[in-house]
Length: 236
Image (tube, rainbow, N blue to C red; front, top):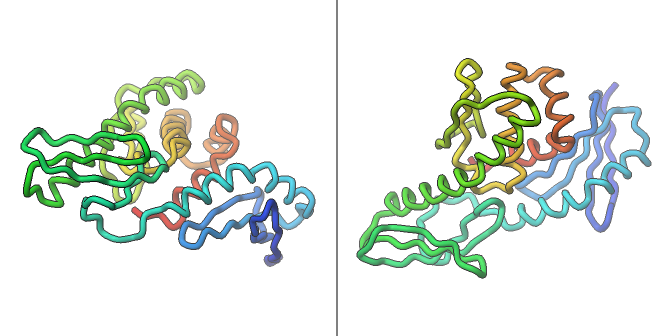
């Protein structure tokens, strides 16, 4: 069997529906153009597809808002007026040059204040921001690890945050250690929550097989939508 395409409009949002030879309904939002696509098995009726979309419409709207505010794909200069993300929210950067220890402050009205010494290079500013992002992740990660350890009945012996080019996280099963991407500090918190669950689930199942996916589905029914948002048209 092939594929068939049509469109649905739900709450003012145009949805592309593609019927394919697949087992599950998948929802994807493309960051490059904001298009929303639902892929469904061939035999799923239109009414059920619409109901699925209606149930997810709040999630779709939230993530479309995030996409609208995404940074353009250009090299950052860490100058006043630039837009920077923190957990899916957009902030305006304001740079101050002072003869004091570099630091970053999160200010009301969606502003980030970056304090650096006079004449600091782009690389220095980037390093200060990177460590600030790392600190924000490290504040949130322990609670998430504790939550998923308890639910899955496993024990994470060690964890860390590092810059990754192609992955959101990794799990060393032998040592029960997980690493999480620094870029998760820019994604919505539900993305961080999902990646922590994903890596901890590997302590139950090494491979991305049906057993692994069933663990994710039981703990986080919308994991496929979150993963799709993260991995399609990524800025990394």
